[in-house]
Image (cartoon, rainbow, N blue to C red; front, top):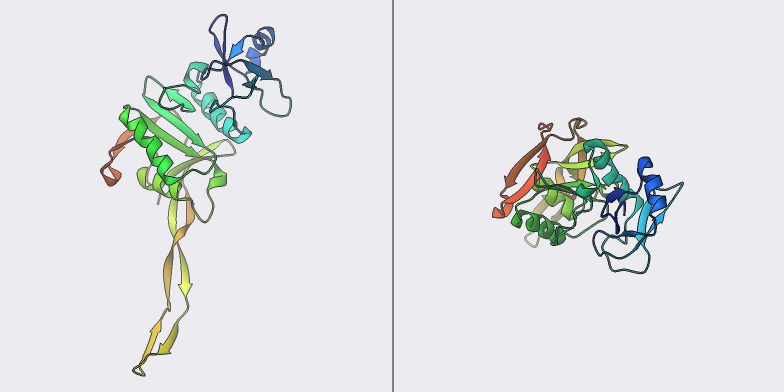
Length: 244
């Protein structure tokens, strides 16, 4: 994790910020997890992102976090100029990666595959709490056989998903991918010739990716309710124009 709380002065800080390093090293014995309150150890990496980890084995949700996930959070921290109180926030019912309290926007950066059911459940829980949710997906999830939960997000976000690639935030539209069905035929029991094929058919899962323009104004959110399947989901997206 990249945030921790000092048990003495309740100060919450980022682990990777250069300006915080002296403070961390002087107080490294006094940091606790913002989620479970157990003691943390500061890992002063040189080749990876400096971070905190639990001193003892823990069931805390933040214990298992990859470098890729942290980098996605860093993108928003740096571009939105966030403070530690807006990152890894425990809302009791969920722990969004980013929470903009004044806008009531939760940003979930997703770097691993989840089920469609889990994706919709988490989105619905934010809606029930009156919070708009913005999902950002890691590029490694964008394969030709697009996972079902990303196809659902594509529907929910009015024909687009968002990803971060080489420090660039871009919208992506999933387009149908076609395959050619060769013509074939046979004689039926009445000695009549029947044929099929000789046309293009859309794949059900495979998609092609149409990339939109880079989103420059990261702080310009559009808040809306998508009534996909009458669930009235509260979503946050960017003011990117339709590009397909």
